[in-house]
Length: 346
Image (tube, rainbow, N blue to C red; front, side, top):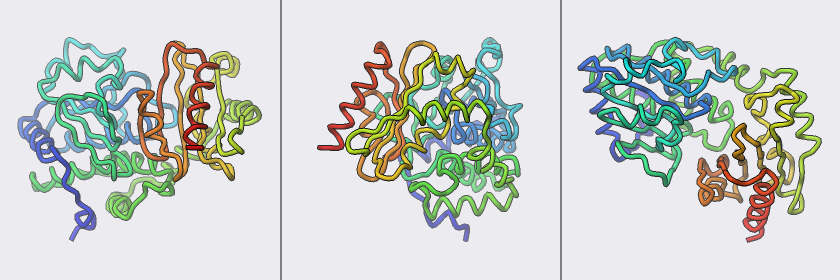
């Protein structure tokens, strides 16, 4: 018996999604796959893992992104399947897609420049492990118990293998899906890691993905710019509410002075949360368009996703994010810190 079947959960519309994907495969249709803007390890790994499996089955699948792949993720295989929107001839490929699949998000708004390409497809489906209150349209397969969208892709691929009677996973596909799962579980240490997560990972390991490289590139590789940026932010970090709340802030001036990118901010908010006594940590960063992006990490006593939802954000119980527009960085920091203090003392 295959181990993951013990943990199988029936998700509304999952059968319908499997059916439309199977139809696309049998018809050798074109399938567009759309990870969210700023694709992280789970979004990109899931998208590539799905594209590889669909192509192995006979479909013609490609991954479309808004921006160049995060340098930290350049080790992920099959990047030739990824097309940046600016390089896309929208008069050709997307016009013929029979199916569009959003990965690691359900709202078309999170697809940025590509949302119209997604909406224009005859059939749209979304695969995600984040609970969302946003409108998405189309079919949705959401499993908040999954540690990563990579688990959902694994389930879908397994279903297709059963229907087609052939193996669709390859070493590259396993590498992509393992990247997705390792990324969102923090290397199998976050509380979202379950027995099912390990069962899926064990199956993927049979295809010999390079787990050492995945872990090193995601969590241990660093740059001089990243080190200097961390030094600036850690030295200016603020601690409030009897040190239960920690936050750091970064404006465009600092990013430009250090010639830093968003990738250089990876891990900072998690480090703040790891400080003894801190229950919730925030990283406030000013984006190029003036909007303020807030990343949240918390413990069992502060539900990050519930906190973010009134601000139009979301995510998980201990990891969430939100974007606030039309306010200055100072205004957003004051607003969010005050509200978080009320939550901590409520």
